[in-house]
Length: 344
Ligand code: NAD
Image (cartoon, rainbow, N blue to C red; front, side):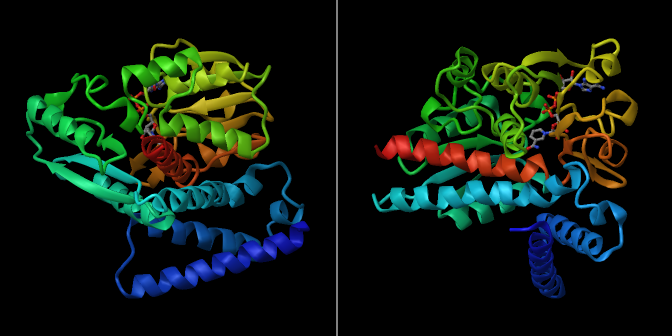
């Protein structure tokens, strides 16, 4: 489809979405995810209606184009899952995710609501397993044992971060490896590091998916990873190495972060530090994948100062709406993988 036609199509879809969300707003039915969608759709629509020379020039660079295409990345994954779930359901099984929620937390509420809706969209089911805020480690372990034994359950997700009194609890040996959709068990971590098939953490998978969706080959490139946590930096480092990238891993104790990030052809960021990566810390043409999600007084922002970096970057993921929706799709993909293996 030529660019101008595809822009009209995008604009039409934005308008449809804004109309639907406006109706939901009037009925008081908007959740946090809807707000993001409304803001994003309105912004894109406004850009497309504007005389902004950036748009007129036919998407110089890839940054804006990527912004437009981020939802289709998640949509494409969810579309393929719908077909796979239909085949599983033909065998009288419904893929099922159990979400263990400890205490009451508005972000966890929003997250589960989003997962329930996405699950319903592909034909999977999601249940809440609420535990009191002060739950003892032994009770949490017993609950996980029950879920491991429950034939209905294909995937188990424990809400993170754990409350303070459980911090340091090692759940990596408690969840059944066949239901480990978050890739946290010792076995799945080991498989990732050995490069054999297993379940990897969804955020790291989503970051690699964004790279692939932008048509970027990691092979032979210098990738710099900011953050080394078990859910983001560490696993994405392994996935990059599997694709023969040269990887530099940085973290809070790294001396001159900018000196390293400026060398990056691919910059993968998951630090939890809003606006950490600024324009002076990147080189022109870098591809930036930002997994950071930080709630600030200015709203939800990533770890990369998006507005100042977007012009220099060949491609950049926005926050909100970049890696996040794709992570949810990857979590469901892990769930469907688990369900397929369990019905086989
Ligand atoms: P974490 O606190 O466990 O790890 C953060 C890592 O970043 C650490 O290795 C730390 O050394 C490093 N770091 C922190 N500040 C730094 C700095 N100033 N310079 C260099 N390195 C620094 O956090 P996490 O769980 O890995 O989450 C990181 C971010 O990713 C958070 O914003 C979180 O909300 C987000 N996140 C997003 C998703 C998603 O789906 N997109 C999923 C999980 C986490």
